[in-house]
Length: 248
Image (cartoon, rainbow, N blue to C red; front, side, top):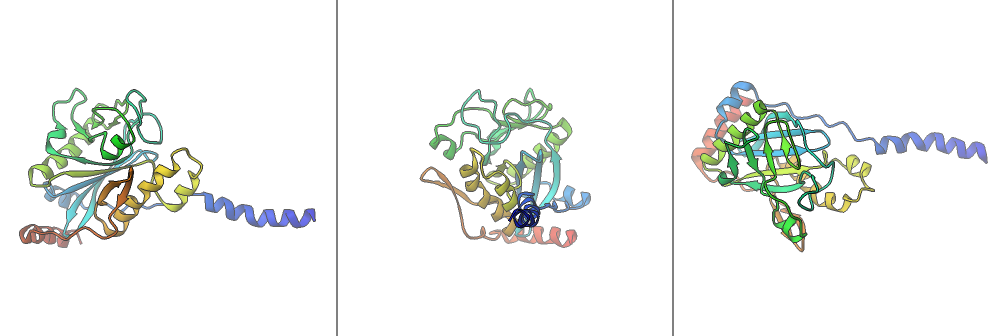
């Protein structure tokens, strides 16, 4: 009996170990540097991954968002999990939107983008805090700090998009790349139920290459189940199609 149990263990343990190991995630290759320069002013979208310490900047080409560049996050604080109260030193997680008046070109941390915490979800939970930023200077207490060079580029693209007519820039902030195996790896976390609300947003973008359309209902994040509408402006569509043809 002992030999049979040992045999089963030898068979099952490697399989269990593989199930607990996150599958490798290959980041999409960014567009060429030449095309990236041409896309200054196009609508943009940002994804942040805490565990990977990565900020991804996307630009709209045609009817999809393509990776412009990936930036190493210099610093954030508080580990994984959402920000809940002022003074907890946590960096937020969730879905945020940035308008032009949330940009601060003369921040004491070089340049800054106020992500808009607390959003509707945060307020429904009774979370508190103010002035949570993506900024430069590599220093963070609850913010996402970048090098000044990285922040200069991120700020420039967000500013150009908003001044060129984008109503607001969506920023999706995740604790990690929300693959099924990563969710399994963190299934016993205090924040597991919250992260289950975020995962559909990650999956939506992976499938449609457009920012998730997020609402808050009954105190929870709710995703739109269908892709976002195509470009409404024929001129914008024409310009974006030209950029896409160059990218290909």
